[in-house]
Image 1: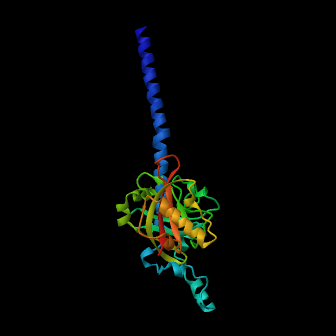
Image 2: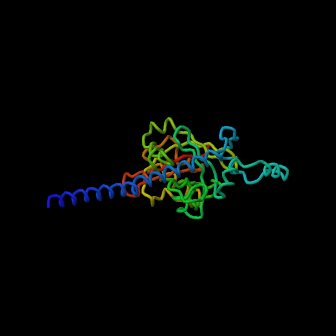
Image 3: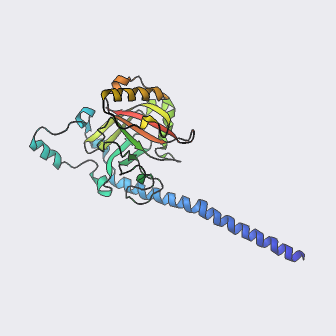
Length: 265
């Protein structure tokens, strides 16, 4: 009798141990392995197509809004110069730029899909990827010429993707990481960050349609009023600039989003 009970206990222990190993493999080991493999794959791809940012000519906000070169010969010359993001676009035709914020870890290609969901779980090679990719809101102008250009990305442990955006909650972090740049077909556009906001996912901060100067001014006032803090820039000054917003989940409450706001210099 005692022997039978002992065997039963041993079998239960063996079964429990085997089940625990199975659960660990399915819920921890394999997901972590997939994440590590996906990260390694994408980082190698990023390294292969990353633009030589330091050697790309800087264009100002005024330059980037020029519509056409002055002459046909200038147009031909411009057409013969490779785009700084040409190699990125050879891998992904949806690529619209490369975003870099020095000393933060943000150094990624930016794409724009037909919707705001595809690149939540697809990488630069357009294959399934748990990290996704920074993407420009599909409602925004693909050349970043609109009043607002909103770029979204996930917030992952290890300061991956847009996790560093959350560090800007601390205004002292902003003070030492105020500059960034965006490389597009036009060249390198310098960014100055001026505000950090925590907003719900349906906030009017995500508005992308501005018809009148009044619309722009009212949006700038809303942004400054909503910000946790901001620099000394005024709403009038902001209404005359092209804004760029980096958005990610920040978990203060359900559907909370952290938004780092800047403008093209």
